[in-house]
Amino acid sequence: MGRRDLLALLAVAAPLGGGRAQTATGRRGESDLWFDPTQLPSFTGTVERYLPNPRGETDALIFREGPQIVFPPDVAEAVQRDAPRGRSIIVWGIRARSAPVITMLAFAPSSDATPVVVDRFYWRLGGRLPQAEGTSLQFSGTVKQPYYTPQGEVAGAILEDGSVILVPAEAAKGAADLLKAGQSLAAAGPGRESSEGRALLADRIGPALESMRPLAGPAR
Image (cartoon, rainbow, N blue to C red):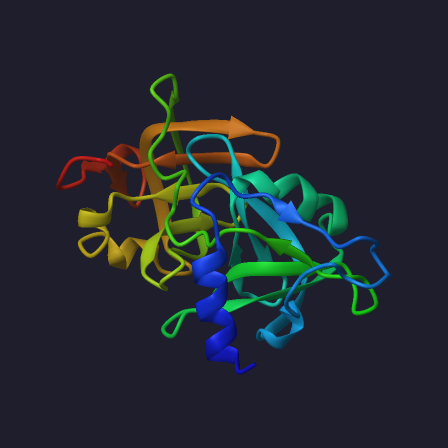
């Protein structure tokens, strides 16, 4: 089976409901899966940190080597258990054409472990829209790297301390200069703080807290 055929079959088989990790019969035994996930492109790196979203969920991580990995929040606990911060992980998935961001389809803590398969594609930033009871936050810092959508579009920024600032899709282009690595960035908007850090969806943004301006377009 070719790689394209496998991805097409995965797309048909992926359920529309919540994501979960489908593991094999045994971590180091024979898999009971009907396909071999290791036919997919693989990416290995060391987990630098996990990233929260404005809903307080964990749905991404960044490798110490740079790339961002996105996955459904439902599998975050399983991924973190296999690869806590500072540990390496193998990810099978799809890399965006235009940016170092990978959509996770399977993962394993080492090459001799049976891959765990994510049973749905995380094509959209499901946690971008904060919950109604989200907290109003504001914080600032230096941009470590842009935050990408699974398609490779800039959707915000990751600060040096791991805080995440997302921007509404229609405002991303206008804020692009502030979202580059090394820039000073401040933002305010609804979000959540969790054990992984803090994240917000910006409705105001600027190089410093005292110079923030409203973003064009409604937050969504």
